[in-house]
Length: 214
Image (tube, rainbow, N blue to C red; front, side):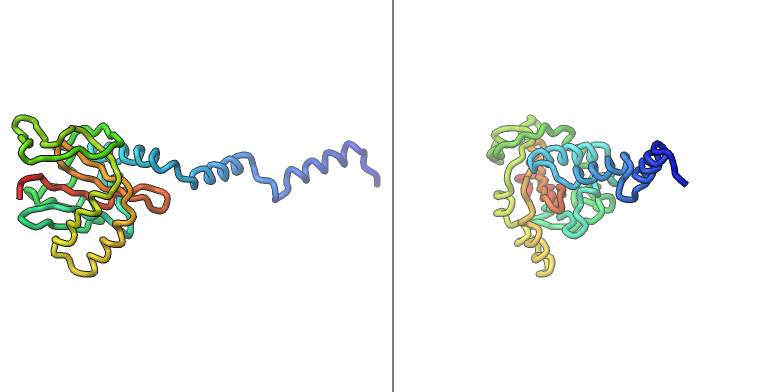
C-alpha cells in the first residue's frame, strides 16, 4: 500500500519531534540556568553582595539566613575577651550562641552597629588615648566600615592565648588560610573575617572585643 508523499513527510516530522535526544525548550533553559549558577561571580563582587546579605540578615535578626554563612565543616569562631586573655568559642548555630558580655545573643550586635557602608580600603589606625564613647570618638583615625585583606588578623594570633586544646588549634590553623576579606566596624571595633570556599563566602571568625577594656 502506497502512502501519499505529504503523509510520509508529516510522519517523519512527528517522529523527529518525539526523538528522546531532543529536550523540551523549558528543560534546555533549566540546564542553561544551572550551568550559569555553577559559575561563581568575581570574588570582590561576590564578597560585597555576600556581606550585604549577611548584614541585612543580622539587622533582621534572621538566624536561618545567618546560619547560611557558617561553613558546615569550619563553622564560626567567635573571639571575645572577658578578662586578661581572649576566649574563642566554636559556633555551629548562631541562635544558640551566647556572648560573654551580659550573656547576650549574637543578634545583639545589630543594636550596637546599625549601619555599615562597606568600603574597600586599608583599616585606619587606632589609639586608646583618642577613644571616648561618650563624645562619640571611636579612637580610630577614620570612622566607617572597612574591608581589607586578612594579613593583620592572621598575624594577631589570638588563638595562641585562648587556652585551646591542640585539636582546636589545629582546626583554627586549617581555617586561617581560607580567610580572604576582613571587615572592621569602627563604631563597635568588631571585626568580621570571611573566607571563600566551595564557590561562596562564609563568616569564619568574628572578633567581638571592646578595645582598651582589658
